[in-house]
Length: 219
Image (cartoon, rainbow, N blue to C red; front, side, top):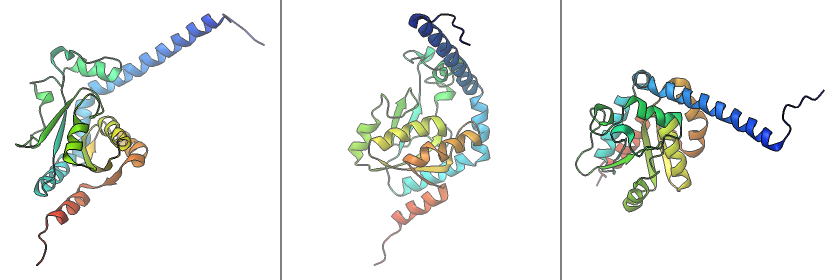
């Protein structure tokens, strides 16, 4: 039995477009809810993984080894002026007002403030390369390897690493110096996309490798 309500191509296209809009609206709403509760959830996840102390140990070792350090910060202007709200994720950034220049939400985490001579890249999308000068800086530094760590493993870290892989960089993601909303989301990013585009190492492993670079040679 075949029941047709509107068999015209135009009618089918209208129904398909309507279904896509509804699905997209639900996805945007989910992303928005996730981001609005994300601050507390991300902080709890980072604490459960000891992520900040681990990241500090890697940062200290990189500085001691004399490696260039680039701080990537998500910053929007008041009212999120210029932020394209094409997804629930970016709509939530505007709604929560958590990453506004000059406010607590856009400031570096205590202990991770850039030092004199360290570079800062400001972004307004998940990918740290998109619309920024990161690629130019890395090229000028002669970099061929990126050690990535920080927040939002399945968003910022993953998107940036995907781009960096296409750009030809070797990458090492510090597994226990990254965090997101939950361990489920963390492992989804690590086990799938990031396992294909980057090497993975613990903070202790990265620190040990960096310390070997700084050991004086025996005469």
